[in-house]
Every structure is written in structure tokens, then in C-alpha cells.
Length: 462
Image 1: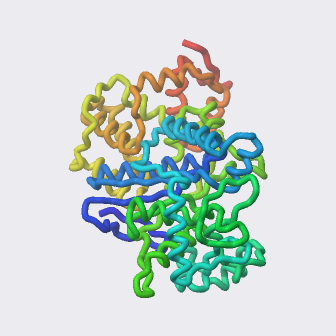
Image 2 (image 1 turned 180 degrees about the vertical axis):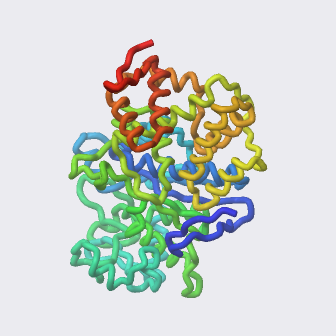
Image 3 (image 1 turned 45 degrees about the vertical axis):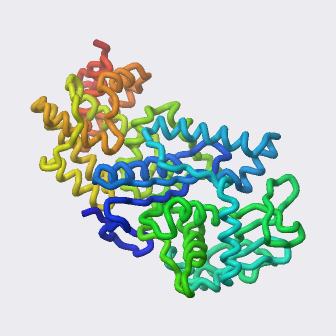
């Protein structure tokens, strides 16, 4: 039985869908004003993996991942580029689609754009005002009153007092409380705006705040109560906390809030050489930059090799290790014809894989099964092992190419032979003979023969 770590409950819980046999899942997507970065890649790949496993488990999945196409950063960038917001956002939506396709990410069932749901946002804001959870300020902005929602802070696990003390909040003289957040922004010069009934000095014209869009799109597409809401750990507070406050207050009945989501999932941060990725530190990488150096499937493999809730530490060494590991899997399949990738779940290795994936999507343990199958395949050349390896890997979106195509791609790339030799020497000193053998095999596949002697290791081409 599938168990999911629920951020709201702070524990793994048995997954029980609201409707038997069906799963509704909403994931916060990208704000499209620039190329996607490694943090976006992790969200894409992680929740693609989640949806793939749910479907492999027999569920009919409705997967929604939104696109934020109206935002302060979008407006600023479009004005700087002297182009329309639509021109800017469509260009980066196209780039996002290209990047995600290269990473083997299947398209969500629905990809709603925020600008398509502004009327729905206005209606929800009106409802919140009518129920006493929101107010129009003197400058025409509309704010959510966090003091009026008893459950505020339950996702982050902090009280309002803790949040006021620990969070840097925007100083705004129009707010009743520093923690109140904006639902509607009054129109400003050179910004797009929509008509609204909220009044103020701009006769109600304005645009929605960021948080309200997900509450509206998720409820419109999945209902007021759905199974899974996902996103990066950085969205837990304030974005997801605010979503809960908006949605549960707006859909409340007789003063009782309506539960929005049963299971909240958050993937861990991406770090670069053990530091948090950020533009200010100069360690910020777009997906496109990484794919200039590494095969896209290697990047996908690297992301899934870590548990989704753990920090993901990006470095060239870790990507090189991922490349070696993926090469081992493809090498095991070389020369094997696998026409049918159906999985026999009665097989002991398939049962191990399922047990790992049902334990909060434990991809590191699931991948260990793939390597055990590869070792078995290298020994036996068994068609059954090849079929199972290919079938289980396909659930993770891996080993989708013919082995010869992947391995030929590896051999035609410029290789750091001396660097690989030093890595092999280090592996042997650490008694990691499997890694040392894998490096020798990678070099051999590239037509490079190693010769060990008392004086050290030299190499030559075949």
C-alpha cells in the first residue's frame, strides 16, 4: 500500500484517494519570465515520477501544473524588453516545454495559465470579502486578514506570533496586520489591469496577487477538495500556507472550513557544491546550460537518484557519477532485444521495486533494484532480466533509448580520460571495486584500453 509523507501531518500516511481508483494532483508550476533552472527541473521530474508511479499502480490520474503568466517580474522584464507580456511569456513557455521534453517529462493533463482565470479570482476575492476574511484598503489593494482564519500556520507548523517574529514581512501602511497578504493589486501605470468591483482610487482596476491564482485554478479544475498538492520546499511558506487560508475560508460552510487537500508534498532544495543555488552566489544554472554539458537522461537519472524530499547537491562530479551509473545500466542491456516491457509484479525484484516506490516514492531503493538486475543480466544474459530491467526503468522514465544509441553518444563525446583514470585509482583505494570496474568498462566502451603496472596506469586507444 502506498504511503506518502504528508507535510501537513509531518509523517508518512497511507494514501487513500477521495474517489476510489482516481487521483487528483495539483503542482505549482513555473513563473515564465526566464529560462527554467535546476530547481524547476527537479519539480518537473519529481512530480512526473509521482504521476508515472500512480498510473503504474492502476490509478487514473488528473495532473494539473499551472503556469504563472502575470507577475511583477514578468511585467518588469517585458517592459525592459519593450515587448508585450504575451510575447515574453509565450517564448518562455515554449522554452519550458522544450526543456521538460528533453528531460523525459510527460505533459500534465492540464496546464492552466493564470491570466485565463482572472474572473474566477475576482469571484473568490469577493467571497472572501463577504465572509469577512478580506478587506479593501484605502489604496485599492485587497488584503487577506490572517487573524480571521483560525488555521493559519498549520502547514508551516508555526503560530502567527512565531511567524511575525521569524519572518521578514513587507511593511505596508495599508495593512491591518503585517502578516496580511495581497489578493488584488490596484492598477499602476504601464501594467496590465482588469476591471473589478473592489473600488479604490483606480475605480477597481487592477490585477490579482500571486497566491490567489492557485486557489482558483485548483478548485476549478479539481474541485474544492482534492488528493495531492505538490511543489518545491520553498513554496511551503508563504505560498501554500496562503493557498490553504484562501481556499478553506472561501469554501467554508456555516463557519466551518472545507479541507482543501489531503496530502501535501514538497521536494527538497537544489544545492550547488553544498551551497544553496542562487543568482547572488553566482552558482545559478539553467536547464539549458546543464544540457550543453550532460545528456538529458543523465540529468533525469541524477535527480531521481536522490529521494525527492532530500536536498539535491549539484556538482560536475555528481553528474559524472550519474553518467557512469546510467552507462552501466545501458551496457547491461546492449545486445538484448526487449519487445515487451510489461512488468511481472510477482517477480521478487519487481516486488522489491514496488515496495520501495510505495514507501513515499523511494527512488534510491528502486534504482538499487535496477542495478541488481543489471548485474544479473551481465552474468546470465537472461531475456527475463532484460525485460524486467527495461520495464521497471521505464516507469521512472529511464532506459527509453536503444542501448547502442546511448552508448554511441557517450563514446563520441570528448572524454576526460585522465580524470576518469584518477577516479578509478581513488575508487580502488577506497575498495570500491564495482566503481573501478565500471570506469574501466566505460573507457573500454569508448575504445580506450587501460594498462596497469607498478609504475601506474597508462592508456591507449584500441
